[in-house]
Image (cartoon, rainbow, N blue to C red):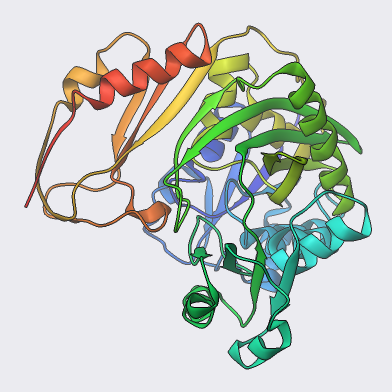
Length: 396
């Protein structure tokens, strides 16, 4: 009897749960590494390693001990360095360590775009607030400040004038893991993301996702939908730019999530991740709109197996996040009604009674979500909106 292949998953949180469950369904042996032994995914795994997801040498040694055929993580940025370090040292399919750095350090990322002719916003990089004088008079307003090494809209701030510059940079620096902030052009336009998997240096675009955010000052993502409503002419340019961006950071095997702004001067890349898109885009929206099992494809590619990327159908899908007034959540009603509505695929709360409802300043402030499927993207969006109207939040 042929031995089962072994998949090593970096992270045991709910973000990794779709990969853990999928790998078990595929008949693989699964190991999970996480510093938290109570992480939700640990109980699903065949083996658990008590290792931090950002401990590069620890992850490598654990994957080696497990004799992994593939190493992955889903929807999180910083563990990508540990994944790449393990893949490099074990000779497994995945991104190189150099690519992992370029994909998780926004400064190195935008320099790679610049070196390879990938359209991007103008930018300046500061290591700390003492370098503020070096950009005096060189920037135009409004502009954006954000940490070099954070994600999930954490630390992002719109800067409207010179008076806001110092405070905004200090705010962004407070959200970074190390010193460093990037000041860049505030791009106006239509924002999308491009969902990609690269197999043996061949870039496959699986979907283009429309995005709605809170807008200024934090630009937290509140809705995604597929397929994009943009014209073919715009989508062709967006796809072409996304491929250039992926190749510029050196992704040869593995997924990518590329965020692009369609401006009046054409599309420009905001940033990318060398991993599946978060916010349930890759785990739920892509399968609901195309029939492509993207998580399975990533697992197979990581293990060196053949990948099926052919669409099974053409539908619409959407996720809408739930927000509420600022205060203490007293009760939540209507979830049972929403879960039984036609077209609603999943509804979930991220905060419950007794927890605080904050102003939406980053992705962790969102209260819950609704995921839907319709015959078109617009129908899926309408299902989400009707479902959201059925949820009653009592907040004091």
